[in-house]
Image (tube, rainbow, N blue to C red; front, side, top):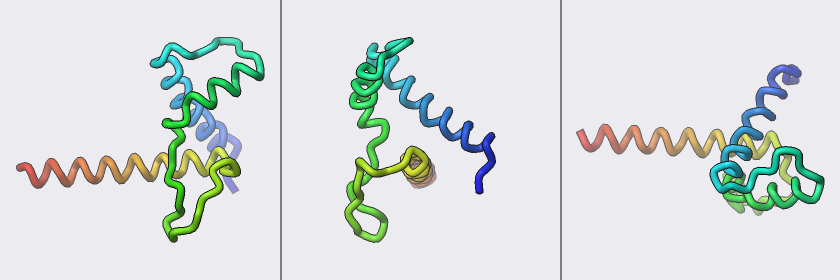
Length: 93
């Protein structure tokens, strides 16, 4: 079981990504209402975008993913992208 500090750190990481995207698009609202939160969340779909299928080819129910699953999938995606870019740099040399 994860510690409270780890969970808070993970939530902060995910929320930082969302906030950064909203601010870059000039859509951030500092003290939002519930409706504004829902609108902002809908706008950051590309930040939270993960594949429609799992690694084993099963259909993923996007509306039922937990926040920590989103974060895990985003981290894996970034790791793959970093590895791919490092491999490309090595091939170019």
